[in-house]
Length: 243
Ligand code: GLP
Image (tube, rainbow, N blue to C red):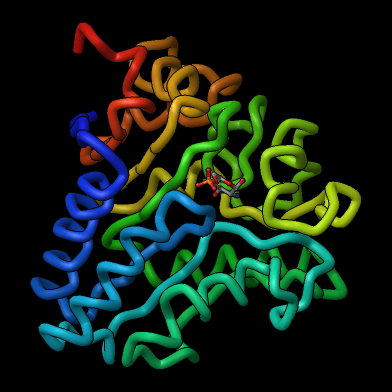
């Protein structure tokens, strides 16, 4: 794993944007695996600014997202589909029909997981962007998820529900289940870019980078990926001093 320590969130976002925009310019037909959460917001703002100022085009780009809350429609403000449209996709020249995410309202979860598995198979990702849960989760793959997993429905860990409650009016509104891309599929991306910001991620970053590769720390699997870059700001990198 290549590790970049940024002095702050601004620098983290700038370095991530350099990688993502560089890839889009180099391969205008790239498939991007995208992520939600607050961490990629700075990167997304820079992608939008670059698109407006420098004309980087997303006309032939495809995107697939990591995860979606089960039970939230695409129009719900806390759904990840809504988040992606508002914070990135609607601001680019991308064809929204070429942007995929699990359907939180699918009537049959098994069929939806199979549909998404097929999408991921059909469009191999050139890059997969990841955030990091404070318990070491990636996408919604909670500790204990088999490394071989494909798209599946998860019951969220109690601390994930608490962490994510800040974006809802009340913790009781946070869905308890979600669809997520599996760890096997995350690992299939040609390149992985994982971002971590803030002191509450330091423990998880330390375990992911320096700890044992174990299903108990989902992000530790990234040590096995041939082209994975972690960008952490100083607070998130606090446990990596001797690296
Ligand atoms: C959620 C998402 C993850 C994300 C994590 C961290 O649980 N499912 O994909 O990485 O939150 O979010 P944040 O970047 O807001 O800390």
